[in-house]
Length: 336
Image (tube, rainbow, N blue to C red):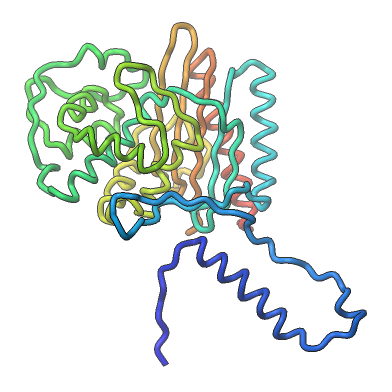
């Protein structure tokens, strides 16, 4: 007899499992006396409700790109509580004005967030949306990555970059692929501005629309929450928005990021991580954020931390501390 391997969405698997469990209990129970039927049996902890995000570009099909269990997972309570205790202490000690955290197990969708309603300027993290845009452009025109663009001189808008370890050379032609590498690996703003001139803005805006995230207004400051920003990483990991080869390309590029003073400080240096940070200074106040997928022991997780405070150095310590709490607790939870 042949067995067929079905690639079913997570929510279908959960619902089938719950139904099978309930049916099995009914079939195996047989006849019960009145006293037996009054016994209390444990119930299956199935999600009460689920939320779905689907593409609506077609007449008859609506491809599923995101599925969320509405309630935060009780299985992650230890990680949640330890991070929340740290967050409350950091704020009370005035190490930060605001801290928001998102955590998600990518193998089963269990998740939680702390201070999810606070919004932040994503700064350089918006470059993840640029990267996804070019992956979508490459789907219809793979040669776009080989297109050469001339870089004449540094842009004045690119000067205000406080964390920097690389810059483009003036008077040189760069391929789109080379600019994407500079933008994602080194967070180079010159490369980002050049790519913005080559980018399909309709595709860029469409990503936000499709993921139910507010679309950036190019003439005003943009703000986003951890619960919304996590969606960019989730669709890349699940490859539900771009084809697998392009999702793989994008995540692999982010594993080469040279920024090591945030989330990476909290994990084993031998564990691979696809991540992107963003920093911004408004007057005397700083913002520092980072999201990353930690590819740990075949059970990867997504973590994101967004912060506001007085010092980038102090905020980077907070990113590292929260990452370490999550990593250490996650290891213990998985019996390692």
